[in-house]
Length: 287
Image (tube, rainbow, N blue to C red; front, side, top):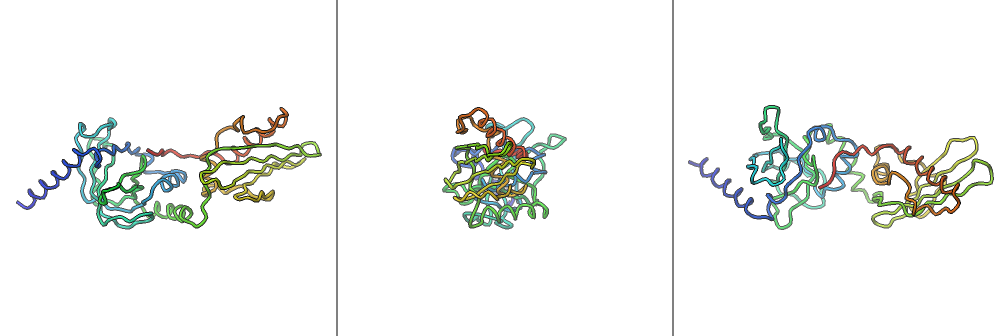
């Protein structure tokens, strides 16, 4: 009898959530792509961490599959789960998290078309709190639920340390100005590229060309433009800010040079920097 009462009470809670547009049912999470959830790149982890006020290690205690008619926007081959989870650890957070909480997640069906069993398994959740609902969170992105492993947490912690540091590289929002200046010798030039940032902090790129030498470039993260600045190392937060934010080509409106040759030089130096940075390799997108 106790079990029947418990299930009835749970069904009533779930039904009330489905009936209220502002509840969990209204969150309509995007489906979790299996390959992303199992193999996130460095850029994926930074993107998720940077978007999430809460990074939680949680163990799923109970899951309930919603009927398709109660899961608007559900993709074919997926199930939407109402999940009750227990907090194992708050890995990082700008707010607190209760000992237990609920959320929605879309998961792919298995090879037999069945809903996978996630109970008693640990996951890392990239989430945000739900206003006015302390017992609920909302995943911030596709694949915002990743299967926990010691290796994944070990990869994640240095990223979170960088993001929560006292001085964090600003988010790049675009290119404001670029100017190429030829030197006195043939093949000598200097190009300055000034970037726009979310907090208006100054960031600039310098490309130096000298006769008989390979082009040199670096990034100055401050007011002072350092001609000896170095490029950021791959898979660091500074590298991510540039590789995953800079436009593919130098905007024509940002190229301040009037001479056609100097304009081509500025555009070529910008292309050189983009190629040196390499691809962002980010496959997870925010909701």
